[in-house]
Image 1 (cartoon, one colour):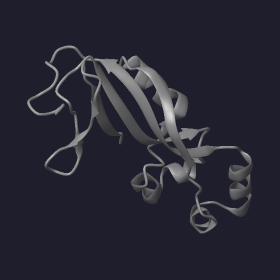
Image 2 (cartoon, rainbow, N blue to C red):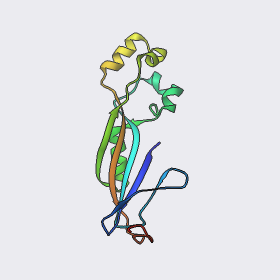
Image 3 (cartoon, one colour):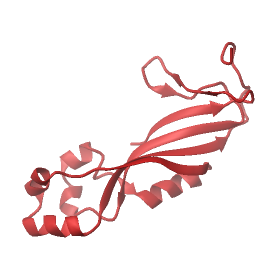
Length: 141
């Protein structure tokens, strides 16, 4: 699941981000020319062992449902976002005690030597949005 924060760059030059009543972040700052967006998700570099892909714990942790990082970034580009950059990238390491529940010792060794990476990333992108007026009352005061 992709989490998303959206900011707008108003024609007045101000960036803004507003939270919705439900505590989540919502599209903000009325309109402007650019929609500034941060996407956050778990992505992979390489293939996880099939045994781990079928574990409910990995699914609940967004690991078994993660897609390849290059595919993820391409999807953002294909959605019309420009200036797409990775703002943050943090490796997710699976503890040995969890791996031992699902993999043999030799499979754990193979997995660790494979170079497979699991990452939590935050990606920034900009998309033109010109269909709404900028600056709702009081936003730039």
